Length: 331
Image (cartoon, rainbow, N blue to C red; front, side, top):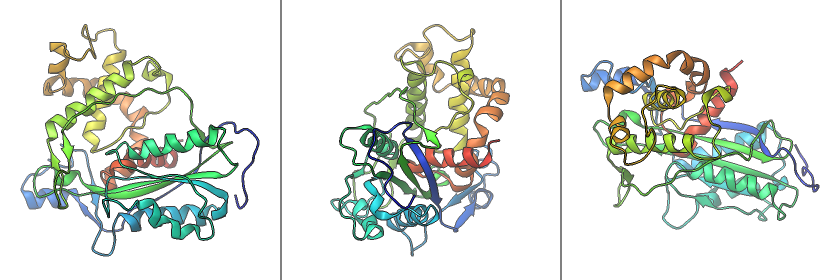
């Protein structure tokens, strides 16, 4: 990988290589449970095991730099063979200076790189991936690789949201003849919602946990039923979800399993339908769906949950830590 890839029209564009980084500092969720006097609430209720955190010697810049440096070094990538650098993060060091520019020190002698920092909550990393793949597939491609680096530090003030924090970064090498080829088949569901936002100075976001969970499930349902989706779970070998916490991943998978069932309610996934809206907050329905779909979860989803359960939520990098887990732990 030391030289430029090719200037012929690219085929089989996708992820050529991956690297990741998370700090070695972490706290066990059992310790948080003991401190808060709530045995099982975080390990069983959230499905998490540990939570990584950054100490005073690290920030999001150092996380992204380390992941990107590992990618360049471990795969012997010539920095001049990279023509696009895209960053996805919502953990800002500055409100104007792009975090991407902090990574340029790894590419000395190569200022000719397109790309920006995508800030769009947890979607920023996915947007960076799509933008990079589109560049390689476009007429503007100059024959070089693209690199996507995404990561965040998720930290919350003391309260029910704090155990759902975490931190880490993932770096992806994008190019033709990839090991993991991106198929053109995809679907999107976007909405305007005030479930998580940072309207003022300070370290902590404002969070409406119940609304955030409902929005997550609504988007999963909609993407699964939109034209252009894969149609059913049986058509894929594995599923990788964005993972704020593991229990939410289980909830989402269980709803997809119901979507495939002939026993699903009428108007399932129709926004505004009374029965559907109630299903988003029905704890009894959720428990029964997770029980009924447990075997399929273990087969199709569990292999992608190892890193997210032990590192915690990494916002833009969360789904990619799931992908790293799947590659590492699947047969």
